[in-house]
Length: 133
View 1 (tube, rainbow, N blue to C red):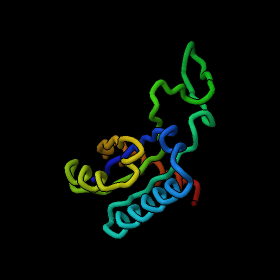
View 2 (cartoon, rainbow, N blue to C red; view 1 turned 135 degrees about the vertical axis):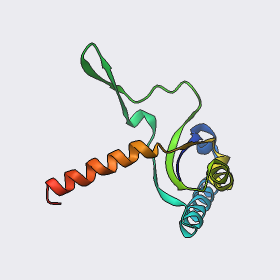
View 3 (cartoon, rainbow, N blue to C red; view 1 turned 60 degrees about the vertical axis):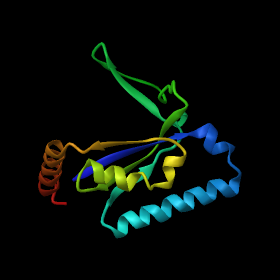
View 4 (spheres, rainbow, N blue to C red; view 1 turned 90 degrees about the vertical axis):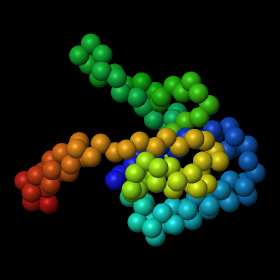
């Protein structure tokens, strides 16, 4: 079963750490990601740049409006996404509670929507077939 883990980060807290501590924390995170890979639990993921470097799309009055990055009201922002393979939610909690990134902000763990993801995979497969990819 797949889970989407949204890793939040308190950038002020992270940026206040000395360089060596930040680098050490990142090394710990990468090492734990490798442990998850070895166990067959890491299904993908990536880090996100700062919110001020992104944009937000909103649909209003029959048009798509583009605004500057998300306006974050809280001090914690999404820092990365990890796709996790786990037996169930309790197993996902067990795995992610050991992730060093949880020291910098909470992780939100949600079960993936398997039915929609199967539909997306079917559309992608049909597209590749039609495009001779």
